[in-house]
Image (tube, rainbow, N blue to C red; front, top):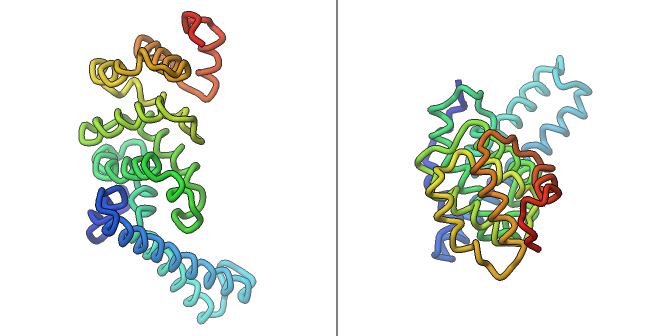
Length: 235
């Protein structure tokens, strides 16, 4: 079974739209719901402190805590956090749900790619956005990339190659074996002769991963690859 989220979530995709007025309105709506969830969490913790237990015997405190939990969950589900948490929390066998929630997981990554400062600002995410980013990319690496998001994710891999390193970017390398060879090579081709030597190194690293699809990618894979000298002296 997988989580069912009620209501329309299509408005969330305006977090990365070109119209800045629409984007600002969606961001405000998203942050207001997160703020409401935070207020509910505060009420829950306050009731827990008064009760001295997560399972109080007093009926009124038990009801207060249940109401706070429900309010927190409902408000979180109104934000991008809801479908992204549903995606990362899926059982490995949830193939249908994996496809259903994948566009929201990609939206989360696109939001970081385009608006990294806004993405990591306090009030934009519940808990750590970097932890969520790692969980999203790990799930794609483990369970595959649906056709519906293949183009966007390939573009995100290319963006990670071109830019200065951001926290958890190394997880993008784990997607290589799920992207068709011709699509990824064609996307990387314009960067083969990049002026920046680090970009050229990264391209060659991903191409080598394409040639060895069974290799398991960890945070040490890049360093090990550099140490082998297979980078042909690029520097």
